[in-house]
Image 1 (cartoon, rainbow, N blue to C red):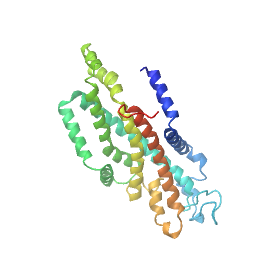
Image 2 (cartoon, rainbow, N blue to C red):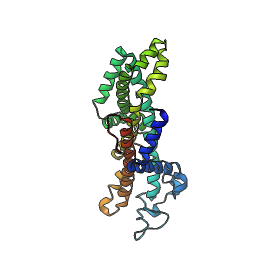
Image 3 (cartoon, rainbow, N blue to C red):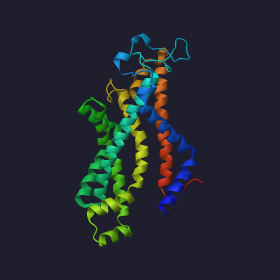
Image 4 (spheres, rainbow, N blue to C red):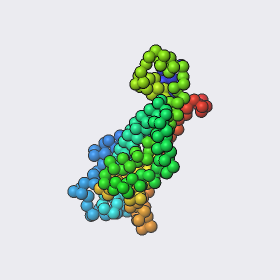
Length: 295
């Protein structure tokens, strides 16, 4: 099957899969809103000059006491809930994409080298991966954040990367072990192709498709992990927006009737994660030949 026919089939499959379309639209809207946050929100909720306790716990605009520009109300600091959600989504997406890029690059590189060279490098890499894999990602991230301290978004990204690279490394190694037995790899070796050429030109392009599925799924996992860590108080600092932290603050007011402080941030987090998972499910079906495609 030619490359053009594969692309045409995938495009046709995507356009006829309502879940994939809905998921990608949700992700696109979330990314666009995060990029345009300074222009589409009534305030920067983390600019102290623009936040006033005068608007403390203002309800949503359609309720008694609600008023513009606070569409979804305000929190206990007088910050606009809508603005905080948009800025919180931006933090979630920054952490998600950064972790996927850094952990994915490191894991793919380690898996590629371990699978190709084997021997001691493979043994050391896999034992290290097994050690990390024996703990939950949340627990490892919690541990490293406890060591490094809660200082910035970059610290959260590093802590999650340390725990998250394993799945990429193990998957890439398995894929390389399978691909390197193919006839075209043997033929390339016979023609005198060097290790670098074999790794970059032949093994990497043919072994990497399973990684794309992991990237799509892992993006949602990392976003939920960042929200979980922030909810527990070890994630991003209080000076940074976070959906998880908003939920943590909102739970203290839920029984006092200020439901909007927890419902809207929680719904935004679910909305974002579900959208990513819908698209990831379609991608998994397309890139896994063992799954029978619909239609």
